[in-house]
Structure formats: C-alpha cells, structure tokens
Amino acid sequence: MSEFFVLMLLGFAVVSIIKGVCSVPQGYEYTVERFGRYTHTLSPGLGFIVPWIDSVGRRMNMMEQVLDVPSQEVITRDNAVVKVDAVVFFQVLDAAKAAYEVAQLEHAIINLTMTNIRTVLGSMDLDESLSKRDEINARLLAVVDEATHPWGVKVNRIEIKDIQPPRDLVDAMARQMKAEREKRANILDAEGHRQAAILKADGEKQAAVLEAEGRREAAFRDAEARERLAEAEAKATSMVSQAIASGDLQAINYFVAQKYVEALKSFAGSPNQKLLLLPMESTGVLGALAGIAELARDAGRGAQRPEPPRPPAQPGS
Image (cartoon, rainbow, N blue to C red; front, side, top):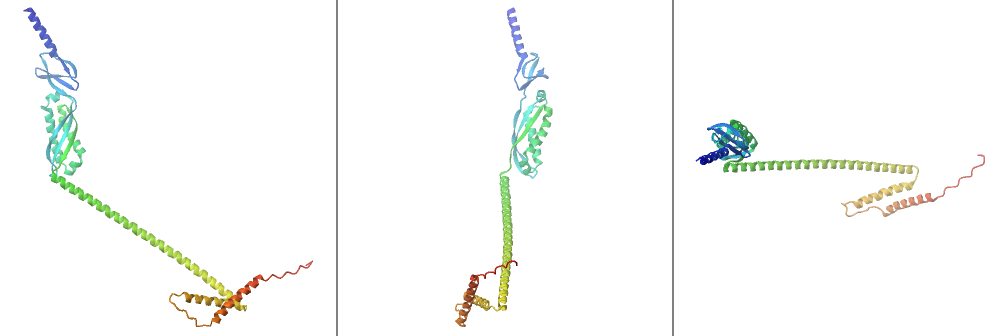
C-alpha cells in the first residue's frame, strides 16, 4: 500500500512538473490564465507556470501576417460600379490585447478593411480610383491602423490588388482612349503641315531675295559695262575728231569703214531677215576696205622707221 502511494506521489510530481513547464516557440507569445483570468504573458523560450492553477490561454502569433480581403462591389462617386479586392499586412504587438480586447481578430480586421474600402472609393470618381492607388492605400492604412490600435495590432500595409470596372465601361474607356490618341495624332499631323508650310514659305522668300540680289548685281554690272563702252566710244570719237582736225583722211576712212562693217553685220545677223539686198556699189565697200589696209600699212611703216641720230654734243657747250 505504501509503495502504491509512493508511486502515486511520484506520478503526481512528474505530471505537475510537466504541467508547470511550458516551451514557447520563436515568433509566438502565450497568455497565462489563473482560474480563467489573465495574469501574464510568456515570451519565446522556456517558461514556468503554477501547475493545476495556471494554464495557457491563447497562443498568439507575433509575426507579420497577411490577410486576403475578398472582392466586393463598390459604387464610386460618379455612380460607377467596380469590383475591388485587397490584402492587409498586420502584426500583433500586444498579445494580451489581441487575445482579450477583440473576438476573432482576423475576421474583425477583414470587415473593418472592407468597410473603409467602400468609404474611400465612394468618395472618388472612377478615373481617380483607377489612377490614384497610392492615395487609396495611404488613406485605408491610416484609418484601419488607428481603428486596430486598441487591439494591440499594428497594420503595416494595405494594398489594393485589383479594381475591375464593368465590361461595358471598359469598352467605353477604350473607345475614349482611342479617340484621344487619334485627336493627338491629328494635332501633330496638322502641326507638321503647318511647320512645313512655314519652312517652304521661308525658303521661297529667301530664294526671291537672292534672285533680286542677283538681278541687282547683274543690272549694276550691265550699267558699268555700258558706261565703259560709252567711255570707249567717246574716246574713239575724240581721237577721230583730232585726226580730222589734223587733216588725217585715213583715220576718217577707217572710222567710216568700221561703222559700215558693223551695219552689215547687224543686218546679216537679224533673225527676221532671210534675204539681204545691198543697193550700193561694190567699189564703195572695196574702197573703204582699201582705206583700212592703207591705214594699216602706214602704221607699220611708222613703227619700222628708224629714229634719226642725234647730233654730237659740242665741246664746251
């Protein structure tokens, strides 16, 4: 009998030791309850409780967790119906508050997030809800984090995964985008034609200016040539006048013959004349040509005539 009692005591001691020792894994915290009332929290590692009196209440995950927010239909400010889903990243900071301040913590966070998604998107137009994801995420995070703070929870991020407008609305948006692109293309095309017309007009202007400058330069050079020709004619006339005054008939014959030949050249080169009639004596033309030849011979003899020797200088002069 005594041996049985000793065995019973030994078994009770072993069971008590086992119930009094608690191993908490990393990333978790256990709450300790004494007769159903929270007393303290066990951190990761080896912990001790009073056997048969204390018990482990809640095993709280202290790591960051992810919750999928189910898709729901939301009406925007411009009465467009869209489907929205999201994800929530949260972490328990106070195990006791998360265990005893709210029932079904994850369910509460999901419903709180869904409610605030409807509130935030309902205050925005469809275009804003599609283009301002960061603003939506920031507003949701601020509201949900503040609401879950009494529960000992820190909401780190809330991300909108997808916003799906109705199919007919997507088609209308596609047509609108296509029309906007065609409008921009037409504007660019018109701008290109405008620039081309401006450049063409500018080129024509510069060409006209250069052409006018060329005509001006040509006219200036023609006037200069006519002026030099007139000067040459005046000089020739003056020389002939001097020759006439000195009684040199050969110079007169040369001048008359030159004008005569020029007149014949003009008649012969006229495009309107096919037949040239000379109502004059051929001897007159030959005489004029003979005068020119005689003038040339006299000029040659004058050039070959030696210069007379100078008289020798007298001594003493």
